View 1 (spheres, rainbow, N blue to C red):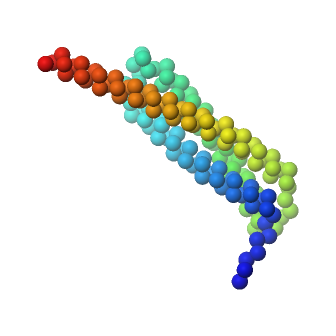
View 2 (cartoon, helix red, strand yellow):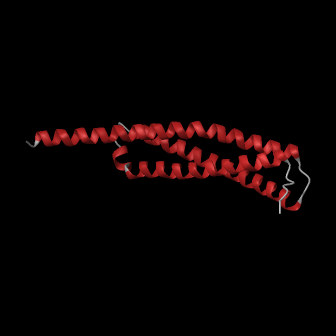
View 3 (cartoon, helix red, strand yellow):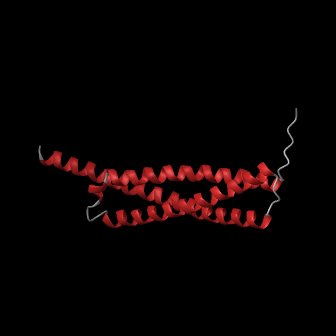
Length: 146
């Protein structure tokens, strides 16, 4: 038996896109947690004068990303719930409301993505510098003990 999908094409597109954004957002949450964990694991070493300002800056950026994640997650959840209700109960669409919500979510996601990439790159660079410094310090110490 063939199942006929009566959901309008635009609603289907919104649902697919919102689902993709929800998936991306879950990944961002995992990444944010991982990055925060990296900084916490090396917190004492990063409190050195050379690194402290970057550590503070990254803490602020990660908090801002958390807020964006929270706001976007809320909007996506509402949008998916509305789309689900439209589908389940064959309710008439409010195109303007759905469209505005899609645009709002898209703006947040488009702004968030480069921020994640940049902070991730910068944190990895900072930790790479820290690890290189630690290796040099160990090498110097071993040479002094010879």
